[in-house]
Image (cartoon, rainbow, N blue to C red; front, side, top):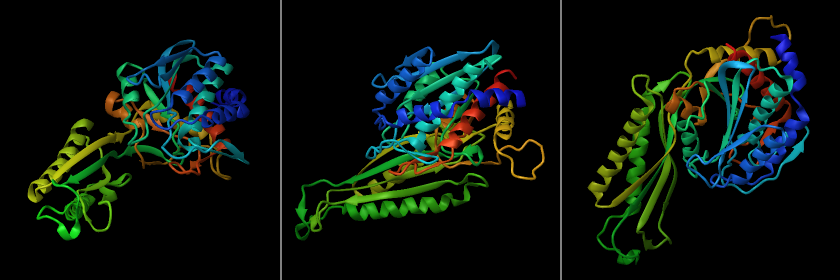
Length: 402
């Protein structure tokens, strides 16, 4: 293990990694518009000597990037997967402040993807991959609700999937073994008839009142869900984040809408898509009952974020934990035993959920120390990017030949 670590430590280039991250962060790429960022990554990889494939994967506007690096002998394939789209916020260009790289997507997750690229380079430069292969993939359409994960789903359906996956999202302090599934819902309540002054309002349903009743029923559902809980992942939930209605203070409103999320735990007795279908049926039954009772039209739009996720006992987990323990600094006075990450839950939905739900492939989310995701103040530790690159490369050496 120490010889492998020495090879990798020499091959990982901090400045090259940082420059790659800066280039990716420097390209504006909100979800659905990540073509330029994917083109940038493809060009970086080509200049590094890799053969780059571009796959439309059901979204030809921004073809995904695929690179395959084969070891010296056959073996398992470890996949590094990242998304290059960002949430729809004003663009913040990259800037370096001491150990921190800031800018749009630095935390979520362009810098992490750059660390995976550097791990691939290190394996190639050290000529260290005796067996197996690395599959590097990067894509668009990740961030909800602007994206639906369909490009990755198609990549998986087309066979672009390894025997195990590493995802450099911004989770570094636990090894996530479970994660809730999630969807967004938008309920739009409408009444018949034209706009009218409130003193002339007709004897028709009050959409604001119906919206308030829907909010009450969603909150009641959330209370009923509190018993569906897991010691690591927490409980299932129904959440309301927005309520809007009317145009001005004294016009009888024609429309009211509410928007929120529904999150659920995995069900080991049923397939992920069956559990998700049950969740959707429950929401649709709730809104349909209210529409029938009030004489309003309630349209319910549902957008899947990701299905629920579990990480099974697998040799891949052991390989990752050995690599993490070898690379990560050991507290003073601690013994020489293997010290992996403590197990925990994944607080968000990410692509690992899709790999598990669609291909039953184990996926570990582990990225650099970072913060500010989905804000204008994203940041990532450059030193920790170097650590992640080493962990990824060493995990490949441990897993691919096993």
